[in-house]
Amino acid sequence: MSVVRHGSVHISAKSDYAIKAMVELSRVPPGTMLTAHDIADRQQIPLRFLLNILADLRRVDLVDSRRGPTGGWWIVRPATEISAADVVRAVDGPLAGHVVTVGGDPDLVDELWVSVQTSIRDVLEHTTVADLATSSAAQG
Image 1 (cartoon, rainbow, N blue to C red):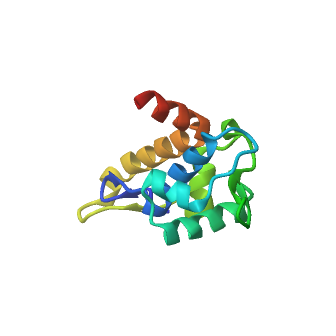
Image 2 (image 1 turned 30 degrees about the vertical axis):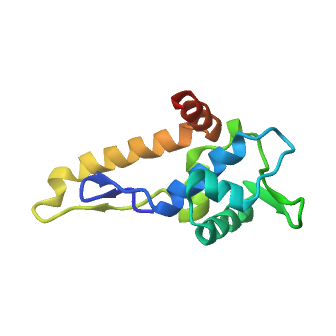
């Protein structure tokens, strides 16, 4: 995942949607499932894209699913134990990223962008899906 690009933060649509899907799944009571259609509708995520994201999340044991008319998706661990970084890594790979500078002497600003990237990584590592669900619920 490219975290810093041309001095601005870049988070992929896949990561953004994955976090939104995890937040949506965390809002339902334990033992409750949501269909992919419900998640897609509630978070305005294209269904096919969401299904690919959910498959990525299932591969790393963040979610699981059951097929059939009473099936659906659920988070495997408590939302308090899943960081935003876990979700981003599941769909976009390592957070290492890279710094891209635009012309000039890259040494002048590289240290700044590396610091920005480190700060972003720290926020992702220390923000849980539960934090995001609580925050978004408070905002309405």
